[in-house]
Length: 296
Image (cartoon, rainbow, N blue to C red; front, side, top):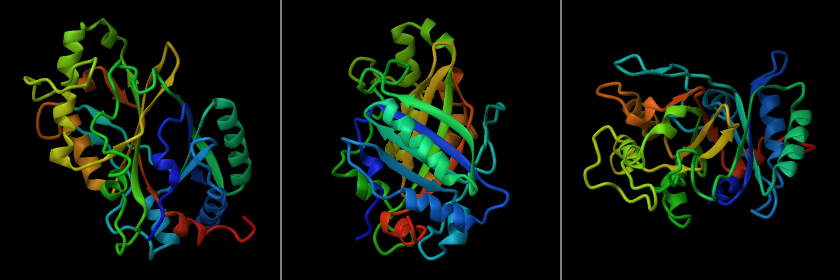
């Protein structure tokens, strides 16, 4: 049975760093993957630092064709709604997501990773995430309401045994900046936008068709597992969307629904805009270990 990267499901971590890299122009893809894969072991549990390693799908397929999922693909084209609302494509080659109990240890691990990857990968995007009132995002609503339980999540969002890429998953990573106008809405107005009650996250009986809960309904689009975190400062802040699925299609169809590709867009997009967008394949532990550098 293929074992997933344990950090995917390590709920409760308080500090996060999302480091996105591009392949160094003078390096071979296999060298970058070997170095990154070696950094993935040993992994620790919730009491320490968790590391999740993801590779651009086409690059992983070139380096490891046998355990590559057949339908994974980069975020190589923006998603554009019919009114022109755009979700940008900012695909990179490697994601290293570090999560831990406090930012000091996350920072130390981030520096070590940057040093280890020198010569094979160049850091091009860095975002620091943090926990906000345990399980809220910066809209003030509970995040991840529709997440499956930890007992059920692996079967829902990991590629099943026997399929190419078994034990792996597809990650959608997006950085969403929030608009200050959100805070000027009444609670009732915010609830109409989200489609849920703010205090307990129960769906509204009369939620609008454009409500966020309606435009991302997992019963319609397929199950995903969200590990979102807030990021930023008082002046510029928002949500790091961190969504896992066994395939790219549920994630991308949700984005098209939110952007309003065929209909009116998600009401939440009037108060938040994506700054980045990338898909990464998160290989199983044994597939990473098989491609790690010999001295890792």
